[in-house]
Image (cartoon, rainbow, N blue to C red; front, top):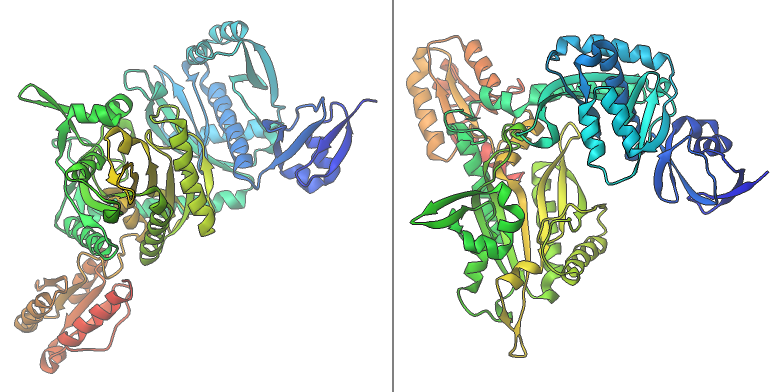
Length: 638
């Protein structure tokens, strides 16, 4: 019997008969581990748990407790859903792609004859359950590219044929379960019977390969978990997320709207929404001024030649809008950095001037495809709390640490936890390998020195430099990309930015691009869902509403309203001849933090009776005392 040596992650070395599978290795260690194992890394390559080990190798078992293992599980569930759909609708439907995504998976289908609706989800799920109970083996098969093309062409799967034709490999892999065959790199679960809990959640349109010139597909979203308890918990979160949907609450609270007449992805701010935004922007200005930033402003359009110098024209123009003025081409800015560099270049700089921190609440426009627009979370016109720090290389670490501290303090104010990742050089980029290494090392070393946990996101940096992305965790444990820190040695070179050093010679500064909240629109969307519209008092656009019991108190209530407004309280009044209970319920629906009830006793005593939106009644107090009460509560936040 030929033996192979298998090295496990703990450094131990074990011997197994040649042809032993990773699942069999797991079973030799323990049945519980075997039940949790869904795939493996063999000498670093992600493979099926059923792949025979033919040579000495390093082996890492991939279990359901990891994100990678859950992705394998969900990708297998995507194949199960496609199998069910094909079983139900046959040649009326073609399959395309079905990846795992965060919290679930989707599969894109093409059909000229059939339109999927949520009413069919039960039917599809029952078919999936039937296929899972059958415990069909999921088997990998490798074949020549030409054979695979012929096979899928005979099956009438034109989209699979396109995918194979675009692959550079001469050999491709397919996975079979029962009578269903799908092109796939894998890995997958050993059999369909391991899929225990899944649920279809929604259906949407999607263009083939994300290009609006291509065929429109039908994307069925779903989720899957290793057990029904986890699935139930997630579905409860989904229901809560629907209640918190910022588009729904934005309409109910009269914060903002969108209009096809204005154009897709362009936000129209109503009075309360504009006030909320103004409060956030004023907060931003104060916080930046406290930390030594200078407030600057740049133009909305800049000559196209400037965008060519920066590299945006070559690497980013598909996301830009252009216009022409007096036969001169201009680009509408998608970013604020160019004007900030022009400010820096407007005079000779000394090392004694650095660091310079330029801050702008800059409105930008980006050409986002209509299919990805989503309320405030993905728009075409938005305002960033953008800043660019120009410093000496020796100052770089301290500046990055300063931004990280800034993020920590601001997220603490809003009550957000967050995660971080470093995104490295993408395929489409500018600059030398040396500059990219210096920039990436600067970010890595700063995070390591700070002792903050982070992950590496290969190939997802900006085209001009690597970045630290900070993802907020909201009340439903969802992740949102907001803050980012980008390190850039390239644009200062392209724009010939210099400073005079202590040696009297010219030197090149480093530029840090960074946002704290990110896009104001996106951040407000996240805030709405995080707080379910119940904003903390300090950012609530309306902090209190004065309500009278009868018309007898209307004059006194009017005086209280004016007194509070003069003291800076954001206050409304409701003096309608309606029942008190009706007015209070309306104020609660509008999620106003405090209702100030005024009856005959309050009018006689010169007081108000505050009632919190939670239903809690406070002791009566004078209007002046209520102002101090409001100020004290707001002071707790910042």
